[in-house]
Length: 285
Image 1 (cartoon, rainbow, N blue to C red):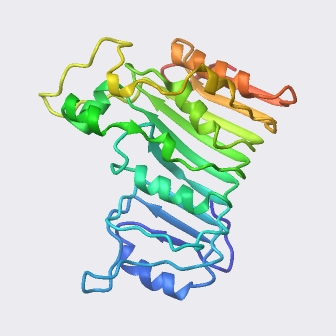
Image 2 (spheres, rainbow, N blue to C red):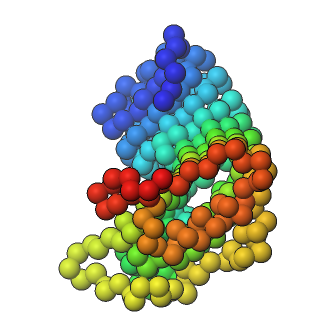
C-alpha cells in the first residue's frame, strides 16, 4: 500500500486512463506512487499517436497488476528511486517471453533492479495442459517455449520478498524454478511464500486436448536447473521465513520446503509452515 502524503499517487485503470495523462502532468516531480491495475490501453494525445508518458524522478513505489498496454516504455533513470514493487508482479516460469505478463514484469524489474528493496511477485509454474492452451500445437510449443526466469535480472538489494507460487496437477520443477528465482535475491532478510498447488489447469472449449498422465513431463518443460544449482542458493542474511497454503499431500511441496531449509542460514530466527485444508482452514502450523 502506498503511503498517503501531500504528494499524490497516480492510479491508472481502464476507466481512469483518459484522465491519467492530465494527472501525471499535474503531479510531475511530486508523484510518489504509480498504481496500474487491469489496464490494457493507455491514454494518447487524442490523435492516436503519443502514448501517455509518466515522468517523475521521485517515484518510490509501483503497483502493477495484470496490465498489458500495447506500448510501455520506462525512460532511463525514471525509476531509479523505486523502493517497492507490488501488484503482485506476475510471471510464468515457462512460456513465450512476449506473451501475457512476462515482458512487462521483466521490464519493470530491470528498470528498478538496483533500487528496489521490497518485492511482491507471483510465479506461475504451468502444467502441460496450460502450456498447450497458451502455446497451441505441441510442435510449435517446443519451438517457442522457453525458461522465462532467465530474463529476470539480479535483484541484489531486495530485502523483503512476498512470493505466491501457483502450480497445477501435472507439474514438476517447482523447486528448481524457485531456486532459480531466489538466486537473484541474495540479500533477503524476510521471505513469505504463499503456496497454491493444484490450481492452474485451464480447459478452453470442448475440443481441448486431454491432460497427460499425472507426473508426465513434456519435452519443452523439462527443468534446466539441477541439484547443484539448487545447492548454491544461499540466503545468508535471512532472518524470517514463512510458507502458507501447504496441503501436506503434494511431493512438490516437500521439495519446495527442502530447498528453503537448505538455503536458510543457521542464524535464521523464525520459520513457520502453515497447512490448510480444502476449505482454506488452518489445520496445522
